Amino acid sequence: MTRSSLLIPLLAALLLAGCNPPESPKGGKKDGKAAAALPSRAVQAAPAESRPMERAVSVIGALAAIDQATLSVKVTGRLQSLSVDLGTRVRKGELVAQIESVDYELKLRSAEALLAQARARLGLPLVGSDDTVKAEETSTVRQARASLLESQKQRDRIKALAQRGISPQSELEVAEANYEIAFNRHLEALEDIRQRQGVLQQRRVDVEIARQQLADTKIIAPFDGIVQERRASPGEFLNTAAPIVTLVKVDPLRLRVEVPERNATGVRPGLKVRLTVEGDTNHYTGTIARLSPAITELNRMLIVEADIANQAGALRPGTFARADIVLAAAEPATAVPKAALVTFAGMEKIFLVKDGNAAEKNIAVGRRADGFIEVLGGVKPGDLVVLNPGALQNGQPVTVNTSRPPPAKKAPVPAAPKAGKKTS
Image 1 (cartoon, one colour):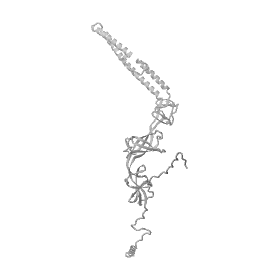
Image 2 (cartoon, helix red, strand yellow):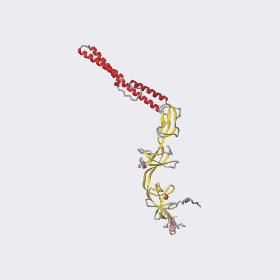
Image 3 (spheres, one colour):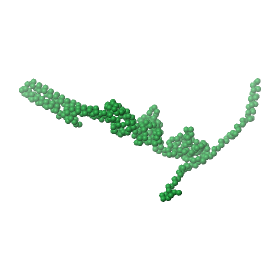
Image 4 (cartoon, one colour):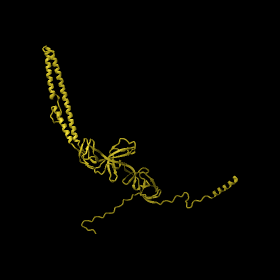
């Protein structure tokens, strides 16, 4: 078959297609026609407002004891008594435990006896707190000084006789030697007194050490707190630094949280903190007391600590807490009534009234207070928002009633019967 014979049927088919345009689908609408109009709906609406709202940073953290200490023994010995147990409340200065003290009482008496002996060697009373001694007035130094003066006079006499030729030179040399011996004995006596003074001071320190060791047999509570753990029992022989109990201070408590770097600029000591804990509907307050000087490099967080009052003892160390750090008590914000918010599939939106129609708008919300919700962008004060939109659709015509619905009236309480009259 030739090429011309193939082209003739193809041209005929194209001519037939141009003369018969395709039919429009049945039931279809003509081009340029809008879809069926939605019915108009009467709605309640209210304008968005600029309201002073609190600005806060939400954080999570944990409560910890403001002070925690493991009370240990400073001296070895047998534990004689333990007056506390798990959960016992103690006051600062209260006796917690007692180590047997007989050995330390004897050590103190021995040290006091040695102190009395040292005082006696200096010519002081056996008992007393004044250890002041004048070396020149002690008997040893006075005796040495008397010998020195005598030898000095003897030397001077012989020296005078020798100058007149009456005394031989040998006697003068003996007198000079005796004077040197007496002079050195006087210096030695002074040094001996100083040494005795040093011994006296040492004995005084030994007495203080023995007295302190005797006092250390009593384990005293360093602060008001509660016993968290008991770690010893009466009758045990304990070495130095052996733990007895763990004590925690629970009022106030230390709230430790981490603030993201983007919110850390406005955080400073003295700001108010509100917190809640798991299983407790109460709200607790405190103030920021301490800030870390640097941002943690690993997670870009600022460590913040607040003191939380716990006088009632309802809070416990180790509890997980959610907190709000109040950065500003009142800050202008664009807000809409809570009734205008619609949440669907995790998305939050509102309906604005524009040109008599409902305009759906996705929003990001911020703070919530007094029945209003902050809108973070896209809405300005004065924009009308639909309250309780329900099944309202985007673009649906609306008839707006800007007056807010009145609050529900309470049923009247029947008046009490007057005295002296019977009720029917």
